[in-house]
Amino acid sequence: MSDRRMQLLRIDAHDPGTRRRIGTGRVDPSERPTRVRFDDDGATREIFLDWEGALDDAGRLRRCPICDFTKLYRKRSLPAITPYVLVVAFAGIGVSLLGFDDPRLLAVLGLLLAIDVGLLIFARTQLVCYRCRSRYEGLPIARYHRPWDRREETRHLDADDRPNSD
Ligand SMILES: [Zn+2]
Image (cartoon, rainbow, N blue to C red; front, side):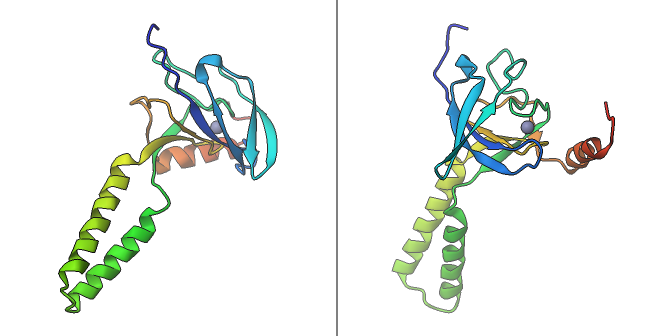
């Protein structure tokens, strides 16, 4: 591992028991910090991270360091502005269909479309844990992590509900 780039892993931590959000924090995976403080609107909570087997040979996240679960799914994190841009764009299209074919309006619509495409391009991909819902962002994502899958979801819910499951 000669090329050890400083890549920070951004963690949006959720409680393994309740799936409730705990807070966000940034860690350097190469340092494997075991106790990390997560901040949530001024309140901090310390969480234990288990790095044993959490990273694969390429330094990518293999399983959830918070709840030790191996099933993660990939999710695109769109900036929060996107829905508003879409609403404005559709409103603009509606207006133009009603006959306001002002070139300035079309220019604005084109600009909004460009912004939206840009947001889609720059949207980052997160890994989300099927069990505790913690989100991880900032590291390269391995191909073996798939998008969210209903069968996986129900399988793990079943496993959690079943007493003495192996
Ligand atoms: Zn987890």
